[in-house]
Structure formats: structure tokens, C-alpha cells
Length: 220
Image (cartoon, rainbow, N blue to C red; front, top):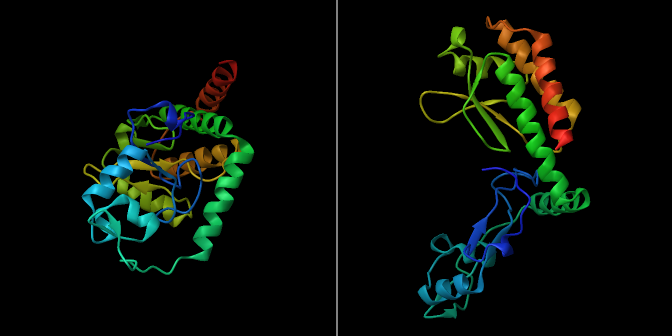
């Protein structure tokens, strides 16, 4: 799960794909998302048929059914669409194209590396390798208090999340139209919360690792 610069058409072995709209495109989750189907994939789905959209990925877009290889007379599913979701998706695509897919992907890669470097400098164990999310364990002296840490951060209006699996880890999402300033703010809030729970680290070392990683990325 992440953000990358590639063309799906350059991978003929992939016949169907779907993208999470909140990652990279920076749109509302669980609404509209880019999807793509190869012609041969659509033909297979048409031949198999289905009576409701939930059994077939084409129908979520078409709100239709195919029985015996033909469209049914009436739509099999009714949904009142959110005009706000449609507008948000359109605007997100416009901003993504305006910035450029390559630039957007490079920015996400940079932010993930900088965040991970800063968290490691604070003593955290980063266990993820995704350009849209950093997953970590707290320093040894705070081990097992990840859920408490998340709740503490959220009480201070710092929106991070726990993992849904056990043992609980901390999730820091790389979402929205972020900037260097906003990434620095995330790191500052994370570090402040960590110290409030008993964490101990060198702020200068964190800044040094952040700058070192930024310079390394800029030189690539």
C-alpha cells in the first residue's frame, strides 16, 4: 500500500486494479476511487454474470446487472450519490494532474523516509516499508503502551491511529497535500507526546537525521 510513479498499461499481466483514494490522490476514503479493467477481464465478468453489483466489480461503477451475457432491464442497485464525494474526487484528480504524478509520488517517498528517520531517532522501531503509512513500535521503555500513546495524541487533536491487529502498533498516515512544514509539525507533535509519556531522546539528533535524509533524497 503506497504511492508510486508507474503506468498500469505497462504491466500487461495486470488485468484489474483498484486504488485507495486517500493515498496519493488525497481524497475521501470509502467513496470514489480510480479503477481499471483490461478488456479480457471485462469479457470474463460479462460471461459469468451476476444478479447484484456486490458480486461483480463492474457493477459498482455501472449499477447494473448482467444475466445470460446481457444487461438486465433495470438497475439492480440504487444509491443516492453524494455530490460532495463526486466534487471531491474530481478536485483531487485535478490537483494531482496539476502537480504531476511523478512529483506527487516523489513527495510521498520523501515524506515517508523523513518521518521514519525522525521516529527512529526518537528510539522507535519502524516496522513498515510503505510510502503512505508509517507503522512503528514505541521505544523499549514505553513498550506495550502504544494504544495509550495513540489515545493521548488524539486527546491533543493529533490524529494518529493504532493498528487493528495485536499486538497494537502506532500508525502515522501520510495523507492530504502535505508540505515540509506539515511533516515537521507531525514530527514535533509526535515527539512532544512521546516525552509526555516518559520518552527520552535528543532533539538535535532528530533534526540531524531529518536533515541528513532530506539532503540524501535531494542528491538522488
